[in-house]
Every structure is written in C-alpha cells, then in structure tokens.
Length: 147
Image 1 (cartoon, rainbow, N blue to C red):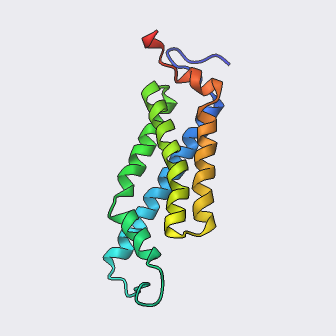
Image 2: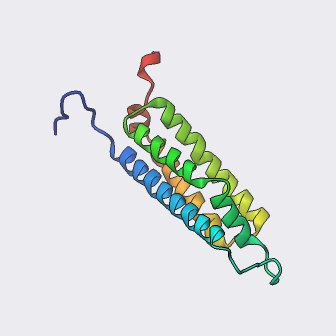
Image 3: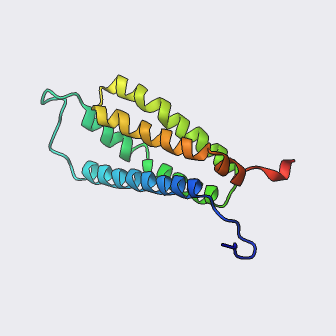
C-alpha cells in the first residue's frame, strides 16, 4: 500500500501505543471529573471518623485538587505528537511511563492500595513502554535532523 504524498506510514506499534495514551488519558479525565463532582457535592461520608483509612479522601483530593485533568490532556497531546513521529514527544513519553511504572508500586506500598490499583497501571505502563521501544517505533520517531 502506497502512502499518500507527504505522509508517512505509522507503524502498528505506534498506533496501539497512542490508543493506550488516549484510553489512559480518558480514564484519568473521567476520574478527575468524578472526584471533583464528589468533592463539590458536600460529601456526608467521613472514612477517617468512621474507622476507615482516609484512602477515599486521598484519592478524591489527588484526582480533583492536584488536577489530573491537565495531566490527562498532556498525555493525549503527547500521543498525538508521537503519532506524528516527533522525537521529543517519544522521549517525554518514555519518561512519563517509566515514572508511572515506578511510582505506582511505591504509592501502593505507602497507601496500602488494593492490589488491582497497584498492578493495572504498572502493566499498562510496561505495555506502552514495550511498544514504544520496538525498533519500528524508535525508527519512526527517530531524530533524523540531528544527524
């Protein structure tokens, strides 16, 4: 199949990784909006005074007050730029997913999160990192101008 004039073929690995970017960004944005709605509704539940751990309070604060929605927007933006083959976006994405893959287990250990909250983000990060590190993705996003 011939590529259209002025357009490059995007490898399957990059397409799948960008789909993962968009899916994770959508989930993060949905969680941020949900947390913001719960915090603004005058929640009547107080897990700390009811013998809980305060984990729900932390998650809601982290999602709403620390603004995961802009981070979700940055993630989708990086996905678009990686799909265009921009080297800086590819490097930034590697740093982002490595950060997610290392910080999630640490947060899980500190906050005593459920096992699924520890494992799912790490598996997603490892999968997207593996896709971005394939030779096809590296060649597609290579910085050819510097050579």
